[in-house]
Length: 394
Length: 166
Image (tube, rainbow over all chains, first blue to last red; front, side, top):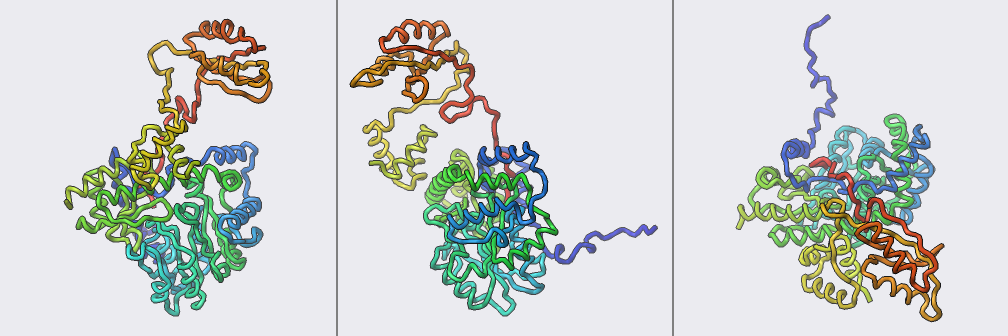
């Protein structure tokens, strides 16, 4: 027997070795060792899943409904998703072959990328954005190309910014509005102009609309509802944010059937199907979850109003985000980098926020503050941040 | 006429009556003056009738009050219906709440007394003796689980979320 020691690292795939762990991880480690933290660093609702949804899942267990479902998810759930998307966002998909129920929207992003990316394909990613897009592109051998946005455009992307980065290797554009971390949204006109560029260059759009329900001043505009886009869009969404169901891990992708069938092929080999009890919960959420969701949305809007006004009062520059549950103020005038700011704020005032640079280009100089926290916590956090900035600036 | 902002304001203070006006103004994206004005106005219109605390008296170290819910059947009177007898009943200070009900009885009376015998006395001496009252059925509350949307003695739900997440 050989006694040679295995170098584990060299046995890993190049793709895995090429990606870095998320920058959020470091903050999590730092913050989780401290007491009395007020956290504005959490990327999920501060509500538990509504009781009727939890109860429906319990009931499914009581009835012994614990076997696999169809690979694409229960047909009743797919039908409910189709009706919901039609009613809410004016997009229509055939539940038979255009919808796949996934293990959270995260699986949906992975499926969409695996279905369309060939090695070397360039995927344009509008940044700052959710931390997993670029790594997932790299894992399938694609090349993530950042399309940075900034406060100048309220973190909205323009067709010009996209067009400037298109090469003959560009395969797709990754959009995610309302945005995590900026809270920005995109209106119909801006999307239509992007649609023209996308069509002209024959690109695919992956649209992660997990925050679609959480818009506060205007109705969400779904990318596939824009003229010409349904045919070339993979829509990724789920139940986590609007229905407060993050831990259930249930989401869905919808797309023209060729794309959907390709994604289903991957999903059936890698996942088989989404968790059955979570699917029953999701069905209840779509059937009877509207009222409670709307109460949550009203409360998020009130908290957004409170945080934006309070931040501006203490001298932080921030745009008024139209959706999600994040504000993304600028901290440039403190002279710190995002990371320094977030770390010092955590150590000195015990407020956890996420430094903007972990969300990609355009994020440096900002911090992501989640207002999915109680009003008392938000009030206290604003006071602490004010004290922290005062020591530095005034 | 009620504006959307007024409605939203009411829903907020119904849940948390002690919220400061400046906080309310920020949450409702309006001015402090406007909030004060809306509150004063709705008080004047008797939409806002008062503010109170929700108290779990079972935790207070004094003799606990007894709450009874009494189903009352009455004969309505021509012209005034149930209103006249209702008024006679709600004027008693022991009566904490009074509702006109659909179904097998007419009035639901909520009584708070110092003891069961106090309550029994009130029912037999004051309530049953009213001319229009045909019958009463008294139910004593044994335990308060939830009142006005607030759960009593619930285990702290707490925040189970990870302190930082993407």
